[in-house]
Image (cartoon, rainbow, N blue to C red; front, side, top):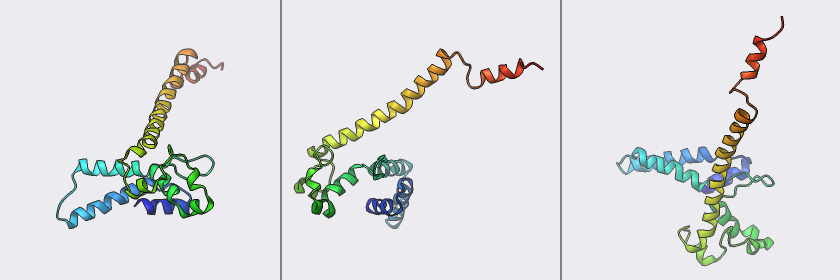
Length: 163
């Protein structure tokens, strides 16, 4: 599903990540059905979130292309990037460019530890940013500005309107 998701992202120019996740689940459910077995809820949960993790592609403000691990290894191996001479200039902390490492087609190698760690660090900082700044702004508006949540001054202004 991932090559199809990458192709659709290039053709359409928009994210289809959640659709690809559900298509992956449907595909695995059909394979399980033909194997005369059923997928349990935990298995579906793992499939859904792991398919999403594989298709992680946060939007870049400049290019709009994804920056997930699969996309990075695709760029390193891309014939177009090799012809332009760019493939060798991609740093190893983004994606290893050794043919021996990329030939195994697995992220469970020491060379992928730094890109995976950077992806994990980015996810952690994103969560801290989302939750932390939300809490800081809540405390700023409720404590520093002394407003009651959510519409205190508006209600007071209507009650004491001259009239």
